[in-house]
Image (tube, rainbow, N blue to C red; front, side, top):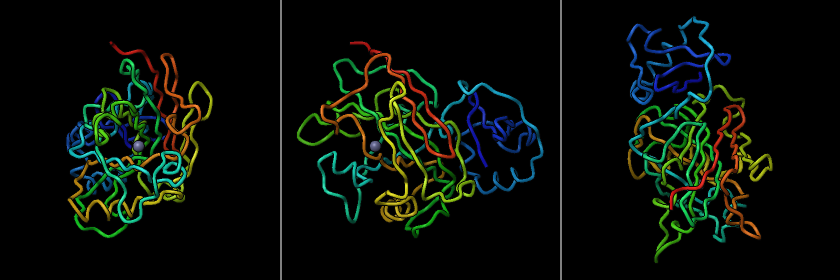
Length: 280
Ligand code: ZN
């Protein structure tokens, strides 16, 4: 199953056409794309009974398939080569975990204003959305609603300001958490643990990896995080970025006004960000 947020309304996506969930269910389900995760198993059962051709839509009208999560987790250093380019050891028992504050969330097609005098960097990531509450859960896909594409945009100067890094703030400027274009359930993939992901700037490929190289896999992250706190329906986990970020390059490279950043995960789709100069 694929779902999306079309102009603020929950839709099922089939063959690139949209089926409005609130209308088609005669109001049984809300139009609110975030509310559906509280009733995830019920939605899946209902969706299997829907026989509807859907209607064509404009992808620029898509919002984040998970617009208002209660908790956003982001995982650092979860690919070996990215840990190396960042100058860190590979985590063994627990990866670094930080947040992206929810006001940074946007849909898949957006214009992002870069902080003035900043070093704005790219990080394509597989994003997990939780479908059922998980607390002290085993490593499995059971509590995962689905997967989407995310960009963990990061302003490196803010991120590294002060005696200890400021990951939460450096990664939470407005527009720094685009997600989409849709949420895809794990059963839609031949192997949900092995998906290609990457990103390009103005057509030049910057990152390309596979999720089989995650140090902490999706099931493992569910176990590690839920060992400490409950994961709630509609929560989001940015699972970490593969090698090829700008800060790890020689010479370093950062996003510039006018750049077109395209990010993808195999079997899900693409994000399209246009970078512009922010206010000083
Ligand atoms: Zn990241």
